[in-house]
Amino acid sequence: MNTFYVTTPIYYVNDVPHIGHAYTTIAADILARHHRQLGEDVFFLTGTDEHGNPAARAAQKRGLTPKEHADEMVVKFQDLVKLVNASNDFFIRTTDPEHCAAVQRFIQKLYDKGDIYIKSYSGLYCSSCEAFYSEKDLMDGKCPDHGTEPELVEEENYFFRLSGYQQTLLDFYDGNPDFVKPSTRFNEARSFIEQGLEDISISRATLEWGIPIPWDPKQVVYVWVDALLNYITALEYARNESLFLKFWPATYHLMAKDILKFHAVIWPALLMASGNELPRHLFIHGYLLMGGQKMSKTRGNVLDPFEVMNKYGVDAFRFYCFREVAFGQDGVISLEGFESRYNSELANELGNLVSRTVAMVKKYCEGVVPGPTAKSKEFSSISLRLQENTMAALENVELTVCLEKIWEFVRALNKYVEDTAPWKLARDSASRDALNDVLYNLVEGLRICAILLHPFMPETTLEILRRLGQPGSPGNLAIENAKWGGALSGATVESADPLFPKLI
Image (cartoon, rainbow, N blue to C red; front, side, top):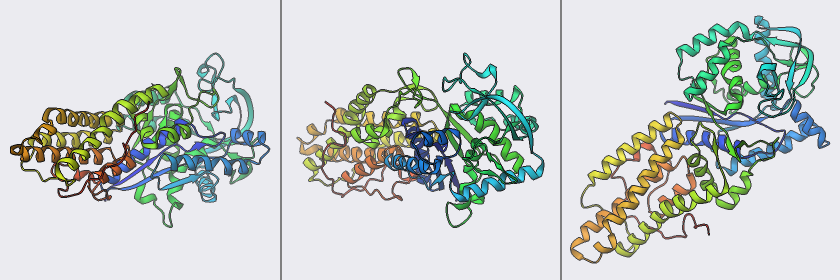
């Protein structure tokens, strides 16, 4: 059986979750659900990053210990994962004792190998992103991501010989042109390496909230090294067996572009140094913007995902995130944009199509899905292309492209209703076979839509199948069943309230 391993970055607990965390988590969930539909053995990992200076400062402001603060904040992230209906297989915390022990074993191996050494260091440090910057990397003397002035830090730290892996990294990039997606991000990542790599500090001497360096417990592991290692440490203790040989290397690490350098340069070098394979792909998505700016807790322009989903529904939110903004690019979101998509596409096009189809089957066929009298060659070929196109789009993590292909089919089915006018066919007993064919085709088209749309809107699609009297078990949701002719005739449809009540 093929395997598929997808990860989100682990989310930092210095503050509450925001819509950006939900965005990446839903994207990973879409891929995980799709690959389960393909019959693959899937492992989907998410979690929280709990060490480091910002978390310690946030705890201090609240009058808590860092661990007390982390224990409270992690619940909010776990709640978010549940709320967006993510099907993750494990939720890792970097304060897990198993993770901490594995991190110590990892860096001890590099130290014993000679890839870690000690030296004094002075540099400009942004505590919000836990990274050192050179003067040329700053924007008007400030951190390019947080807009704050970095502080000068002088310490004696342990350093990883990143510079020693520069050519090996370049060779790897040249041999793996699809390692970082989209291609623009690949070029950006490679340019980081081409500009020359310097050794990086992997410990902190002035911080207590972290994993102790095993050979020098007066220092703790740099939070980014600690965090990156979660992708392999989780496989050692997520279940009662080691999953490393089964699932590593990861198929996709998903993340926003602000952490590209850590994942595209430092992470591969650490893996090379330890003798481990590199992940197959990194997929870098853009920012969700409000008012033309990246949503950021520091800037205070954050849209609360809990509030949005509570008001409009989880599946509607999942749909909007990837329908409105091309995945991989920056894009502007707004409540106005959401409501427009909700009314026009979810309420009018999909929800209304389901309601009309069920109503016509009840009215003209006593609620029983008719059998077709003739195979629809037109829809058979269209649905085959749709299946192929959606699979190709998801294989390349083109989530927005996939949704567009499905929606083209939804619109084709709506046009089919208008073109065939079942209400007119029902007036003529000689048109009974034609009427049955139309109604069967609508049920079958919606069944196929539900299967292909399932990774994006899992609860909605199960409800569509239930209303159509079609089975919604995991086996019936397999991609191979998204072929024309699989609808269960003789099934009883069920009326219900609108899937998406129109917003006034």
